[in-house]
Length: 173
Image (cartoon, rainbow, N blue to C red; front, side, top):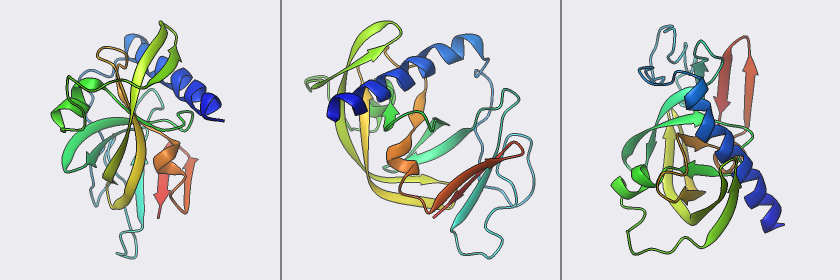
């Protein structure tokens, strides 16, 4: 079971690693909480003011790139329903204090570049717009193994629902 989970995470990481080379993510601003429509931002969020809904507009390539608050630090993430877990770049995880240079990478994952190593971590809090999830399982990849942070199913499956419709991703807690 764990091998299957790690294999799926590895495939998602491989896609994320190569996607920036073919899709120009550089210079794109991640979506941010807003009350009015924004081409790459949040859209009319939380109609009832409960903090339970957050909508994100797709970028021109159809991807959902958003600014997340992970353990108190802002991190750009690509929402990826194909990723089994939240997967963080080593460089970002190191800046967040989640990993030290002396830590061992205790998991092996398969990427398009071959095998890579990762470390399992638990994130205290992940917030995307008005949506907050606590105690989220994640993987930190070895340096250079991941091109973009992934907001995967270890976060998404904790929501009441998530739905893509008409170029908009709805997250609901």
